[in-house]
Amino acid sequence: MKKSGEIKKMMLILSKATLDNVYACFILANGARMEGIESEIFFTFFGLEAIQKEKLDHLHVATVGNPAMHMPTLLGGLPGMEAVATKMMKSKMEKLDIPPVGEFLEILSASGTKIWACKLAMDMFDLTEKDLIDDLDGVLTVGGFYDRAEGEGTHVIFI
Amino acid sequence: MSEKTYAGVTVNCNDEGYLTDFAQWNKEVGAAIAKEEGIEMTDKHWEVINYLQEQHKNGVPLSIRKVGKSGVVNIKELYKLFPGGPLKKSTKIAGIPKPVSCI
Image (cartoon, chains in turn blue, brown):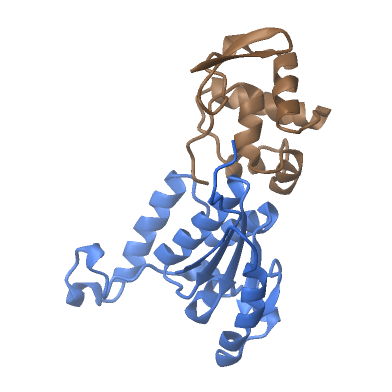
């Protein structure tokens, strides 16, 4: 039986490059594909770091300004703190069979998730397509992204 | 819980149409479920189904990543073989429970 209000396409906008945000975005995009729902990700601002060849394998969790870390801000700011927290999170992820960022991007692309870079953010950070992963589907303006979101059953999520 | 008949065999299914007793499964039943899902089975399809059943028998939780690394099929092919939710559809055809994994 067809349900009303069926989700047909998820348009995700990733604007941050902390590991927790990147994984939230990737899991939503991949989960959509697994359910037979189309998905596309628009990487903008700091989110672009997640598709930069040189940077994507060195993303961190934020230990400062993140109350859910249950760590005093001063402590979180100590050198090495972010690295320790990141290492812990990555090992937990691996145990849950969640791939590292680079491999996750390959899985997404193979699964049919479209990967777009924001033109304005690329200009702002002086990036060219050469700096980004080979699986990139292209560079889009906001208008171009909205164009792709057209149609019934599309949802847009900002992360 | 409901009963359904595939290829002349009466099987027990859950609300989503997944077999609840693998002992009731055979290849003809699998092919009939596939047909219902709009999939015409080929040798490659059966290779994936055999792999999934093997993994399930060994109690290994299924994920797209694991199937992609299995050497049986890559992720792109898996999506092509079982369009519209590859693990969901393939496990249904294989007569094993729908995976609970998010990845």
